[in-house]
Length: 179
Image 1 (cartoon, rainbow, N blue to C red):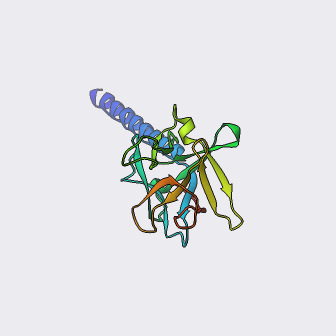
Image 2: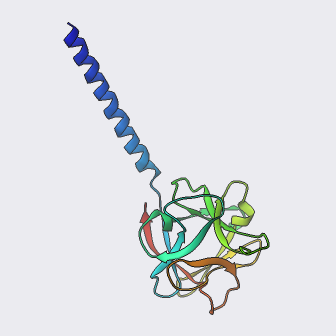
Image 3: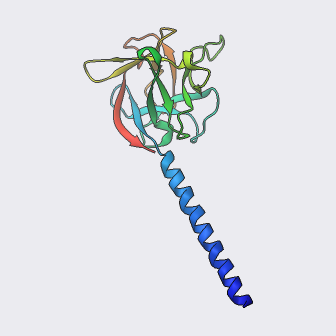
């Protein structure tokens, strides 16, 4: 009798563990997001990327990095009020961090970073300007600056500045990715 109860308990525990494991994988799959990899101007060798190893934190820097289908380069376009948009990172699967303009004087003035969207909607609001060649320009709506890369190499910084052809202000939606 005792062996029979032990076997039933073990069987019940195994079923519970299996159910938890399946629900966790289903939960993880439900967090997967589809968005865009934003290729930098030119040959699109480099894409807009959150700096680091798939980590989000307030004022985490944004750079361009070799184009890959990774969550660091997954950007989701969310609708904002007044015909504007937010570009949110897909790293956490929830879109809680958006592109941000760093407005405080100092070495990082006008730097592009990510910051929690909630409570920061003004700094995160962008206007998307579509060009005839299918490129886009992203303009910080309330401050008038454009998203620009400071060069065309791995880890080149991204900031908000003037729209000209000396810097890299054209961005492309070359690939839809799911991460």
